[in-house]
Length: 207
Image (cartoon, rainbow, N blue to C red; front, side):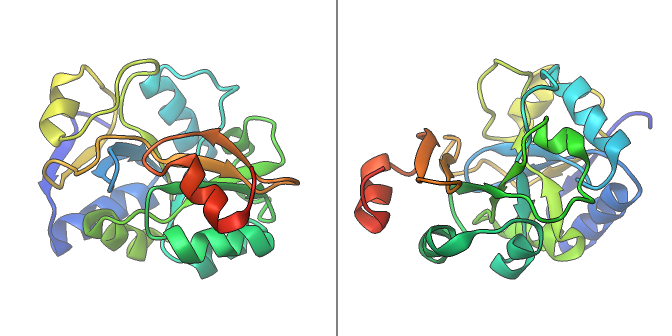
């Protein structure tokens, strides 16, 4: 799709990026934790491009960002524990892995799993984008195995190539990836990130 466009975060810029996503493109955007890269998770060709751009193994699943808890519950079954976590931490730096219920999402997103990782980010720029798109693949905007990126300039300097648009929302606060919790069966922490395990255990009991 040619050289990527760079947009400063504004309503018009976000609307342009939403059009890119809806047309099968790939967009880099700020979140509350790090810069992410995403596309329409229902578009298999766009999802494949994410793996190629990141040089990521297609055996690793991709998380999805969504606009609201209601939107999340259209694609996964959060269950009682998942809803407790969502009410406490969303929007925020917690990713919840729950059983998939919307089988129209590209199977490449799950990488062979029957579950899906979902999150609502606490960043106004990407939430505005999600208000247009509802769902976005939400993986980190860096080459696989390299450090997470905190600003649009770091993305531009990183050597990441092949995306269509970059939404510049300045430097993000945390620079630390989200914590991932699975609520399939007994809840368990799959990755400790911005939210500490003991804080989650305090809310839902031993994990």
